[in-house]
Picture 1 (cartoon, helix red, strand yellow):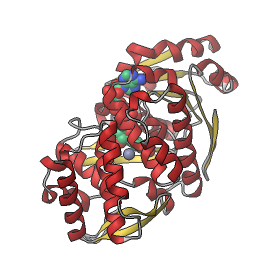
Picture 2: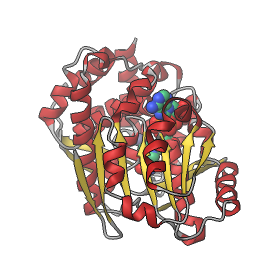
Picture 3: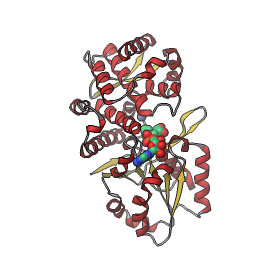
Picture 4: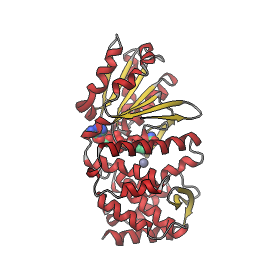
Length: 363
Ligand code: NAD
Ligand code: ZN
């Protein structure tokens, strides 16, 4: 499966499939051979499980050694310290503008290495090699970032990769919590694009009952949705904002519960239900849609416990700090109907009502 991404700044391909590193890398053999250095930046947990899948075929192209640098696993790698350590590694190894980087890991690794690539010598090529379900989203579209103590993703750039190679055989070792996290973004892609696909996704009794083939087809679909949006709006001036469905409330939950205590996608799942409740109240979304989503997500294993433990007053300050907020008003992505997102200012009292209602459902 190959999906083309066309943006103003660059066109490139996303290759998705099981055990595809060798064949996909072959498509870039010339470019890789011409590089003076190739560097794999890999999440250390991924390195322990899957490093050879990428390293071996890469080495077979090159006469020179491939450098490997292991990043702290997960979110902790999106720091100034790691950013600096990566830049230092590149300089010490003698890398230049002719070098090529590989980001091999989940969304965290892709985000920090994308930023490293975009700033080293004012920008060098890199290839995204995602290893989580969630990264079907983050590896595509060119947003890069590290975190600041004042907030997540506060320092970053728009910088597109040369290619994305998504070898889904790496997903077999993904912990259950990370499967939940990633599937929430898949469900988000369905909510903003396609009702029939959504119904299919929600009809499963558990995430485990999805076959590898089905998962693969959902990832491809999710990437297609993202591709279309990024093509229309690379720099998030308009429709790209729709990808934030569920995120205003979700980010607040994440921050309030504490990063690391809940995965990004599990927090977003709660936010998706809240967005649908608000869409029913403020727009013409069919009544009962939010409750149906709630029950389906619950069945699939998502927990709505944060709604019970977090007070709305704790969440609101985080929502007001959201990148989409302005003049103290809350701007939410809502749905006129499934597949038809729009932006809407949400009055505080409506948000409170939705929170209280979801609390009732969750008890
Ligand atoms: P992650 O990168 O933090 O990885 C989650 C955990 O899974 C880590 O502990 C990691 O070591 C482990 N892991 C990764 N792949 C594995 C595998 N194949 N087998 C076993 N363990 C594996 O999490 P994520 O959910 O992939 O990404 C989240 C990050 O993505 C956040 O920082 C978020 O801000 C970012 N993000 C970016 C964008 C974007 O457009 N750039 C979009 C969405 C999310
Ligand atoms: Zn997200």
